[in-house]
Image 1 (spheres, rainbow over the protein chains, first blue to last red):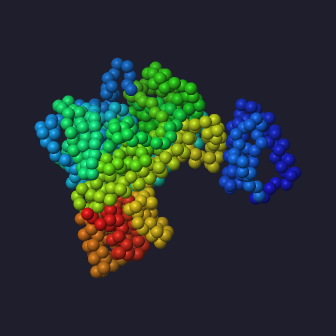
Image 2 (tube, each protein chain N blue to C red; image 1 turned 180 degrees about the vertical axis):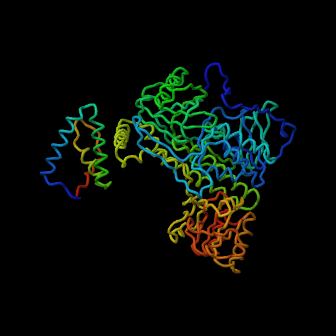
Length: 75
Length: 563
């Protein structure tokens, strides 16, 4: 897997924050789901995608359900 | 259900016949053991009786009702089912009345996102799908049963008891002329989703129930749209829900719509609500004209089946054995395949042409088909009736992306019924030979049809028995003749089809493959052999024929050594 240079990740972070603000709370969930499906398609690797889902499920606030204790593989 | 003021069978387009109860031999002291009793004269029981008759086997067919099932119910007949209807000689009235189709459209918020195009070619004799109300399916099959003197049809006869031993089963039957005991070597339970036989035997269906509910409503209207499957996700006419529209003969249109979350079943099926919801949907599709309400029902998706379809001498076929979601049209179509599967096997066994062990392949083959249906239907059902917020969001995201992007459009594919491949069946003994072929039908799969030069189709040339396709570019030699003779001696109904390869002139050929179409579709070369089962599935294939393996394959399909 090729990861992103920090400068680009920073741009992604800004782009995401602005997009969430533009979306508004009513459409937020659909927006995120569309974004993730699109990224999954562009990623083209189901294992990497599952890793990413496991990473995002970690340490959610207020006891949100998470996956089993196993740490996700990150390479 | 029908509109207020109408009788339960008062249809706008179909006259339900009334069938009298019969004075049967058992009521006059007769105690014959019938070879087969079939409980339930729906499409599946009727097809089972006709299949058995094809093999000369007598059956008694009993049904508690005095007429056909009420309502259009299972309206889609898939191509493999037409092939079964042809096998039992009943396809003609279906072709004359049913509406064939190949295409569909899916819409999200009233914009088209997916064009369904089911596989079709000049080599197919039948369309991928036909729409026909179930009453007609029952009527046409019943007409064929009435013409057949091997089938003793008994209406108004209800099964009230069942017992079995090693040699057969006995049913307690209640009918207006009196009660009696009916003895049979085998009983086929085709008595539907609420099977009385199943509950009397203490058997349970196991599996999943899904939350989402659909109303199924038939209306009569003059509406100009081709015979296609239309699916509307979140349309203005049913916000937040899904709508399916199918055309049926006699200007009848099937409108299925998903209930809104929290909408009670009781409210949903009230006539005023049905009319209001249907009107909104018709407004939405631009139908401004008049329409009449014919019939409606309510539906919840389930994937349920028995652990074993065969219990001694009692064998479950159709909905009594499995209940599948309607999305993908597998209820009727898989039931017909059940009926034909057990029909030819029982025919062979009762004629002494196969070992009784052949019957043990019924449950693995047909339950395997059901489990495969579950895998597909579960996916389409989760899409049609998302069970939770997560599934709803994922669907909304996929549909929303599909408005402009190809990559999520596949989610709108209804995954319609395909014939199941019996690759892990005990009858599919030489699946390893598939490795010798680049293409062509896999071992266990339904044999593809091919249009022949003379206007016939390849599968029309096969009789009721097993068949061998032997591809040749020269006259048969002695070993080939001996091999075909041996196969004929194992199966008295065996059909040998010698297919002359392109450019060769083989005098004894059954079929001249002038343009190489058969060899192309079957990936065959001179010397290639295909063994087809009576249900036109591939029992085995050999890129270069091997008489020993081919003989073994046929004997395996006859349950091993005949008794």
